[in-house]
Image (tube, rainbow, N blue to C red):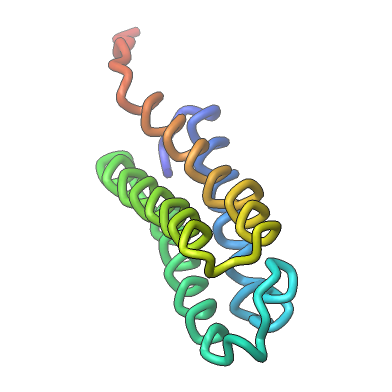
Amino acid sequence: MRGQLWYIALLIGLMCIIRFSLSAFGYANPPWFMEEVGISLSANPQMPYAIRAWAIRDMVVSVLVILADKTAIKLLLAGCIVIDFTDIVSAYLSGVAGLFGAADGWLLKLTSTAIAALLLELSALILLSIPRKISTQ
């Protein structure tokens, strides 16, 4: 994200804060995270592993985006968009399949940080794709 206009850097920075902070909490304490999103640890004893795998993925992606220069940022943002979109679709399909309770499924879909991150990433990518005049003064 180095060398970006301030408003694009702000969008990317907010996305990275959301992605990294939630992932860090999930990695540090998967049972607490599971309780917060309504997933039973006793019914899903393997879930802490999945949460930690998700958390590592998102923390690494956040660091890569923060360290990226202008040439790599569009590709990384496109990757983030794909990741968040597939997370949202997966949550929806799991809800439709009855893997969540009615309230939990909607809670996960509507309050998902993936939606917030997706909006920020998409906005930043659109802004980065707008051609800019280069000042020669």
